[in-house]
Length: 199
Picture (cartoon, rainbow, N blue to C red):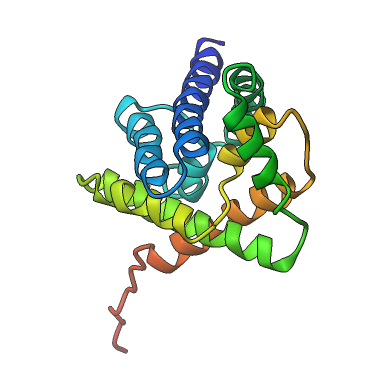
């Protein structure tokens, strides 16, 4: 029970940090917003919090239980949406910007690919952090934002700020997951036993 409580609390904490970064993005826009957004993932990694997009690519590598990953996703989504609703009471500017952003989303192959590419970048950013450098986060987060790639937790926060819902969030979740897993598969260490017994 204690482990589940910790899992949930760290998932809420991750949603809080990503929400702060997303608020800055909606408030400030380009070019400052995407750069400051990196603060969110930096905080998540350094504080050891649970962010779905930072965990899903490590499902097999770190032996994460699928049920735990599902809990992280659900908590990230619920907490992110609620925080977004809270933000909607703070500033009409961020609300207007959120509504405009949601209006550009759709259920399409292009949107899925943008989500997949974000998943790839997220995996690389966290992988580099695990290897001892924050540069993957510092450059990777602005990269996916400037390119218009889609991040499901940032998107659910934006939906909360806009006080609405859009089914594209499910495409985004799937794309983020698939992109992360693809990058893990391409980058994983493959040990080939070349030792053959000679008759």
